[in-house]
Image 1 (spheres, rainbow, N blue to C red):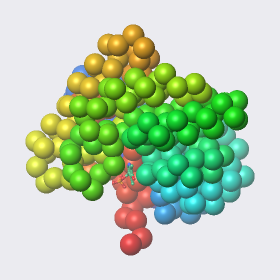
Image 2: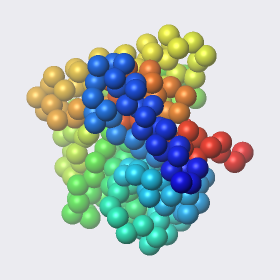
Image 3: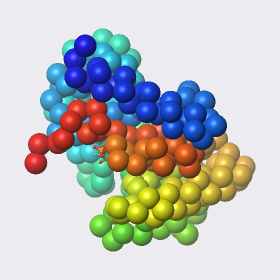
Image 4: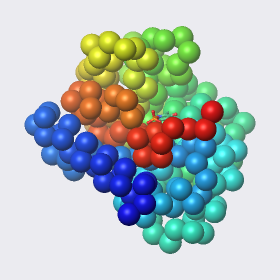
Length: 233
Ligand SMILES: *Cc1c(COP(=O)(O)O)cnc(C)c1O
């Protein structure tokens, strides 16, 4: 077994344990492999280990790596874009990804919608929320998240899957947990509205905080370093 295959198996166990602790079933939480900075050969290893969702952060890297991975890996998988997205990169990203998790403003959603219509495709999206309020983080403010999500869901060519966040950068688990719990409340409110009742997903939790995220109701965790080791600096 390769290191990556062993880490994938450990990660699945970790997610299953976190689910069990929370009284949830392990099938409720998908694992997205965050592949930024990793070469195509390592991305293929994680697919061979069982990953079925990949996440990319940079348009240029996505465009370089994804075609090679498609060549090397015959099976099916989803490619998501999870990084900051400039509107002038929308077309490039949509050549390689089916889902954009980092929709944080209506202008970007409008561009994605226009591109989806032009391509005669449905583009899946998550609205990214800055639950921690840290100024360095992307995402719409929590108090504006439901309005943005409603507006995004109404755009032609887009399918809103749910909400996404990056956990607070804090050594205090209580602070991190509070952010995830706020996301869980927002998600419940979103699903309670008829226009967005289908947007049930909640993408949150990374290598360092996924246990807290699963406890708070994450349906997708996004994991890089726990699968691939530390990123080259
Ligand atoms: C890199 C990244 C992750 C994974 O982070 P790790 O700490 O390496 O697990 C998750 N989400 C986003 C948006 C990222 O950029």
